[in-house]
Length: 56
Image (cartoon, rainbow, N blue to C red; front, side):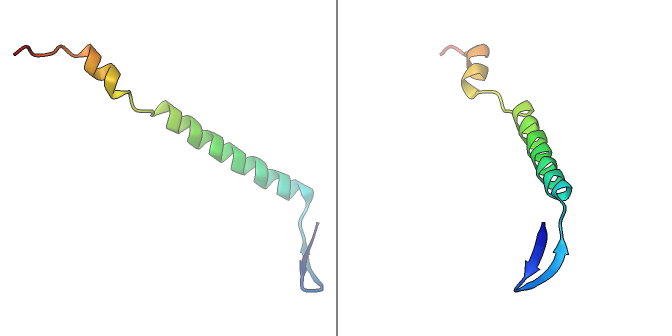
């Protein structure tokens, strides 16, 4: 793919470079989402239900 600056060719980018950038970006986002899900905080309601309550 040509890279144009006004009416002049400034350079060329290959399809491989574009595809690799997209895949790298998706891999990064995938890793971040998996880390977010893995570190998901437990619900407060579940914690409170498991704890004994004091009477009185």
